[in-house]
Structure formats: structure tokens, C-alpha cells
Image (tube, rainbow, N blue to C red; front, side, top):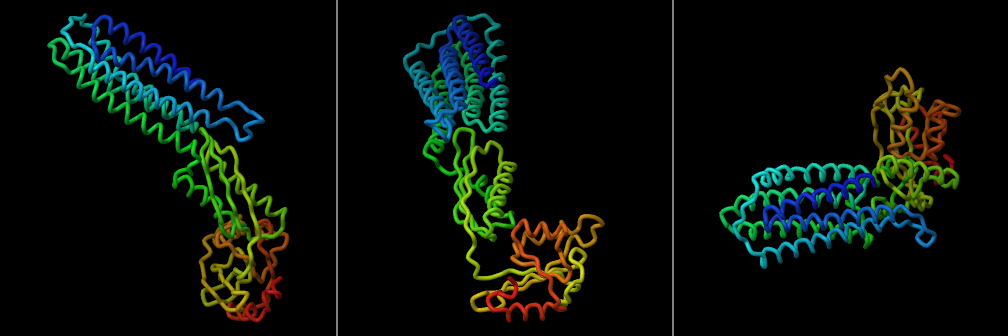
Length: 394
């Protein structure tokens, strides 16, 4: 809001300066640019109004009035179109005559040229930090003013020799304004029509969800913008059946999304338990030949085994190296989190993990931990295949 107020004051200052210089020079291009800046004043007022209304809470609008800010950015786009129309009229109907003006007018116009670019860059930076579409739209509009001010400067030079640069400048200015206005209009309409967020943002959300060890799959993921805020809805399949654990898992996923993406207003997560057709087991190994390890965190390798419960057959088997086996402290939790990335259903270990850090980490993620007396991976797989539907494990 403070930056929006700065924008209003900045535009009012430019309007006064440009109309004053117009009265001294009689420049058609300078007059058109002054009208352009006058429209910017109205755009700043629309921006402030949109920001103010978007923050209000109402029982009639439980999802917030955030889209008012997008309406404000659309209003800015139409004001841009109106500005382009005004410039074209001035170019077609105005008369370009040689006019002598004080020399300081040219220097004053030259000094004005970089100001909109600097202020617009500041607005865009703040708009991106806060996620404000109308602030970004207003910043883009200010940066576009640099070209119009530069053309005015050239037109003033040409005016002294009656060269019709005013009309050429008007054509270029109008094209730039229409282009910027169209881009702002399209962005605003996408939000009003509940179009999905861009693919990059959606992929960030997907990664944050899938990194949670409790998540088996994402059935549906939808995200949309409303003003500067983000609404996320996900339909997940979880590897756990306990409702309390599932609720805690959904809260952790929501926190991860909010940390990764600022300005998230609401995250709605629907979850259901996974229908188990297979089980994934993990077990520490003493060596790559398949000897089961005596200690969980210090084992140099881990075996990952997937068993089809319907046909009771081995689906997949792989051995991965333990990257944390040489850590002096905290290796147990590091290894547990490393294994959780592979989303196991059961941890089979010769060492009991009950009451230890890794055991708590696995329990929180809904992963069963079971002691085994088997000595080799081959014996372990054989015992898993002999278990009817996994009853021996659960």
C-alpha cells in the first residue's frame, strides 16, 4: 500500500511537470505524454482501491476479495488502451508547427526520462516480493513510459525544424502501450477465470508433496491465483491408514508448501489410504553380497525389495549405498530420512529400533519396523515370499 501511495505521488508530480513544460513548448508529443501520465494517476488510484478492498474480510466472500486486485490490474489495462487512443487522436488531428521554447525545457525533459524506469523497477521488485499483480502491472506501465519520454525528447528537437516526428512518436508510443495493456489484461483474465498457476509453480508444489514419506501418489493437484495469493487443492493417496497420523502428515505437507511458496492463503488436502497390492521392504546390509548388517546406521548398504502381494513374487530388488555410515553424530536419523525417500512400507533389521530416533522417524511416517533373524538377503526374500499375503510381517 505504501508503494502504491508513492506511485500516486510520483504520477501527480510528473503530470504537473509535463503539463507545465507543454505550455512552454507547445509540443504535441509532450501533451500526449502528459495525458498518458494523467491516466497513470487514475491507474494509481485504481491500484490503491484494489489493494484496500482486497484485504477486507466478508462472510459473503469466504475465500476473500483478493481478485479485486486483479480487477484493478484489468482496469489499468483498459486505461492503457484509452491512452493509446488519445495519443493516436492527437497525432492525427493535432497540428505540428515550429515553436520556439526556452532551452531549459529540453534539459527538463531529458531529466524526466530515467525517472519512470527507476520507479517502475522498484515497483516490480516489490510486487514480486509481495506477489502483487497490480503492483507489477503498474511497474511495467512506468517502465514503458521511458520510451514515450525518450520519443518526446526527440520530438522536441525535431519540432524546432518542423519535422513531423510527433506523429511517428505517437504511432510508436501507441503500439507500446497497447502491447503492455494486452499483456496485463491477459494475466488478469487468467486469474479471474481460475486458470491454473504456471507449470513451474505447480511442479514446486508437486515436489514438496512427493517428498513427504507418507505420500504414495498424487491423484489430483490444482492450484490457482487469487490476487497475490495462492490456493492449493490436492487429492493424495497415503501409505498410512491411521487417521491421526494421516492428519498430522497433511499438516506437515501444508507447512512445507507454505515455506516453499510465500503468499499461500489456503491449502486443502484430501487423502485416502493406499490399496496395498505390493509391499516395499528395506533392510541394512553388511556388504554388497547380501549379508544382513548387525547395526542399522553403520551398515554400508541397504537392500530395497518389493513383493507383489497378489502373486507373491519378487517385483524389484536393488542395493543402495549408505551415504551417512561414517557420520560421528546423528547418523541414525540421517539414514532414516534417506530411506524414507525410497518410501518403504517395512524396515527389517537385526537391530531393534524401538525407542530410538530412527524408530520414531519411521513410526511417524507410518513405516513398520520389525526385527529379523535372517542372516542373508536371499533368506530374507525367501521368507517374505513364503509369508501368505504379508501376514507374517503384520
